[in-house]
Image (cartoon, rainbow, N blue to C red; front, side):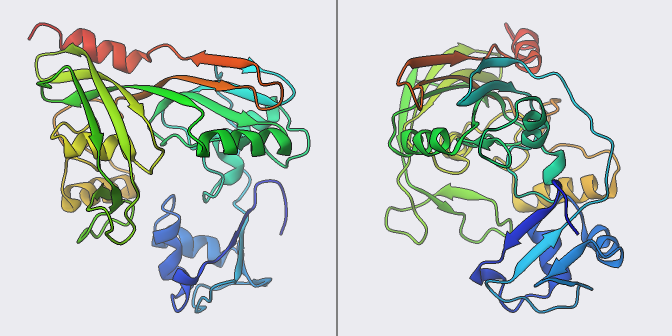
Length: 322
């Protein structure tokens, strides 16, 4: 088994004692249990160098390799905002997967982009930060190890200015609000990905700060500019939910676990998956509008802006004036 599309993962301690076929659909949700069983039957999963059958008991440190069946490449045009030998900055479309540790790494957005802009001394372009699958907007990717290391330091050190545009449910009262509330795992939730505002000092709590400013009040929603001053998982979505104004179109935040899991199961079955709520949108209305940062190698100041996507513009136009 080999090839550019393979997924290679070193298991961490949390996998110890789990049965492979139980663990796979929880860790990689692109396939359900039956889908993973089919991949195992086809010999596409190896554990510790041997073809796996799914009944193996996992141990931290095990290496898992998965090679999906070849599929025709589908390359969508992507607006490129900046490119040179060190980095590529694009306007990422919604519904594209950024992370490489997915069940189909060769078919992710990053793999596709890497074919158009080959990296220098990396196997694939390295995203300097993350955007959720449904979030659009400015995304910075490194083409070299040196550029990637410098960008990582800049993001970790708070040297990158980020501005998002979000459409939140309900009408904001104040024109501006700053949320300084720690974020951690949501206690009592069966959804592992869910985060929540938690007390400082709670298990897994990480300090988080976001500034929100009203751009426009709609009939039953508010367009806000969001400036995260930290970079926590789901930070904007969690802080908006905490304010009582979750994102329009968000299937996880602003709903209970049962509604979210209902949606996920419908997606897995391949049928029409009705999104929770009555927003009538195809994705969460969150857009990374701009990033300002120093070029990782030259130090030149860069300010990248991505125009509002059609879904956001159309929603705002429909909901103006009642």
